[in-house]
Image 1 (cartoon, rainbow, N blue to C red):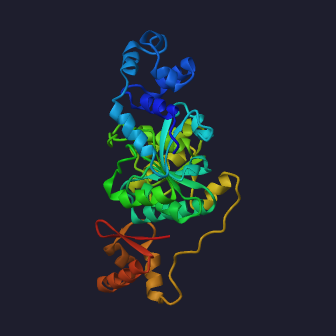
Image 2: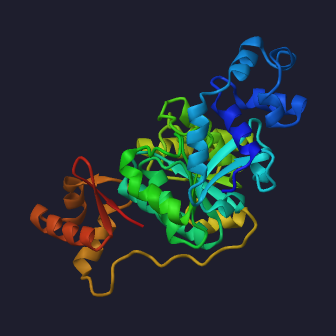
Length: 362
């Protein structure tokens, strides 16, 4: 991106330890511009912020860190977005604690796109992962950019679905953009860098500290018109994002699951509290006043599959079930049931879960 004096001043404020968004916003109201803040006298700064913060501003950040960030910004598709920029997202400005600075890598135009957040468990069931990706793709094809947090599990599935659709995806991360966390999502992050957008309020070099991720969550929901939760335990971090969405006046959606699954309890709690129950993307689009999309084709058995497997599929059900229960329901011997279950798994109709359990896919 084009470099100017303001970039260096914004970066300096962002790189000074312990100077948070609220302090910077107060200083901007008092001094008008970041360059005026970084060159102000300590006595003048102390009229606005505590003396310890004023002292840090006068001391300034390490010069090498500013140069490193400016060098990063010189690369293609790397951007700095500040409160002073005309394309700073309006929805994000409305939240209680908007970020003062955002580092962007990828397609900058997506930061202002109509967006929906999808979050959920880091260790989802195969069905949950499949639901997240399918819903994300449908919403992306309906011109809603999918926002998530680049975590394993539901987040990663949502990003893949968003990339496969028309409106792509935004990943809001809890590290500096020169790092990828978790490392196993490096290829996904690279794909998002090329076709979507990576976003962080944290300076380059910031590690994956636990406290960063709840802060990241407010940006995920803040960029979005609504937040969909797909599989979440009662204590899940995804519920923090949902709570942020509620506090920000956003719509909250949740996909229900089995009453026996711990990963469904967070979603069920949200539904009890008034979240919209979601069975398809049409439920979300209807709530947003955009009409109802035609339902996707069923993932059932093809006509060529025989009646035995069709009958067995009915006995598996959408709740996880073990082999003994399937045999008891269907009357099949274990060998015959296992053979049919293998064919159903290969055809995409059944998932095999940990503990020897089986579950029917939608």
